[in-house]
Image (cartoon, rainbow, N blue to C red; front, top):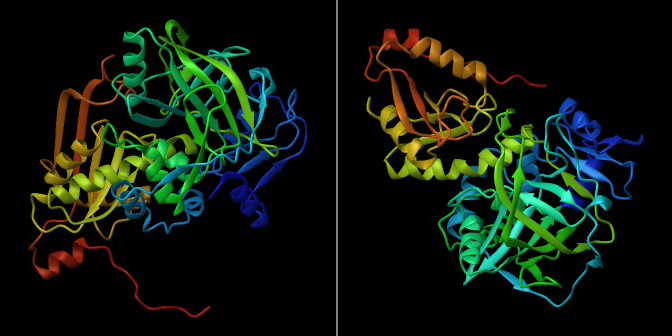
Length: 433
């Protein structure tokens, strides 16, 4: 579903919180998003801008699944199917955008935290292609001037590879930065797939429709016709700037790096455009970054012969570092195999807890119950000085740290009387009304 129809749907369901008083893009909107994290919001009177701001649109799993139009129990399979069976997109000559000279100060770009470098675009999906390789991916972008940004490009990811190749040939890389996208584009852009597989096909499968794209007015990039605001430009091959500090997924400040500079040549905008804000370190950031990793973990588990009931990347692990995996245990080796498969599927994991299928991974109390009741010495494993995540504050600068595995499953083949003492009791009787 496109962004504006989803906002209208939320409004019709009385789920959208309207802020009608004048608010500033400097810290004030971010403070509201933080205070009401988990609640979709629209800011109708933004100081210095004619454009409304929306935020927290995917800030809990109910909203995530509603926008994707999938069931909470089926979304992992929905995304897995989209990755394995991508849809199609087509170019159209019907261009719905109005074009403006570049002036980023006209957009309600937010300043989020006191020590941030400045104003940051956090919901921008960068579209780029080179030598037949297409890519769309999220990148945080700090405003340097009316037509300049500096963006974080993670090394060895696809956009960084395209940029590096262009730089080695003394060429700039054409890009289009789309803001205000459909749920399919947002989720697909956050999904990691093998190089050469274009994420827009995943977006089409999630949207259950052929996505229409238009060529940029000023360069070779293309972008969806239902994006609301698009910045056409290029990544310069011969200019970098300091990027950071910036509050990342773990609610801690990321380090300052030298990063590529983007120059904007045109701003394309829909007539009824709103600006989407994603709060750094907020629930939406964690869900969008973490949830698309779950099918990768799921595939690795299934490939290892594990009967998977559910997977959840926890809020306490910032949706990135901590996974709870519920399995239908067939052997005493299954929990360890699940741990080993999970860290292959998502190497950034720092902690993995494996539970039985009657435990709800999304319920922290239920998981704590399983750990407390079913753990004993020897049912855990610690790996040290292994590759993990640079987001782990205890890791080395190059991302080497520790990993913890906890087996919180019940033992198999225990006498019935002992099993009764171990297994959670449940009431099957259904109450009317």
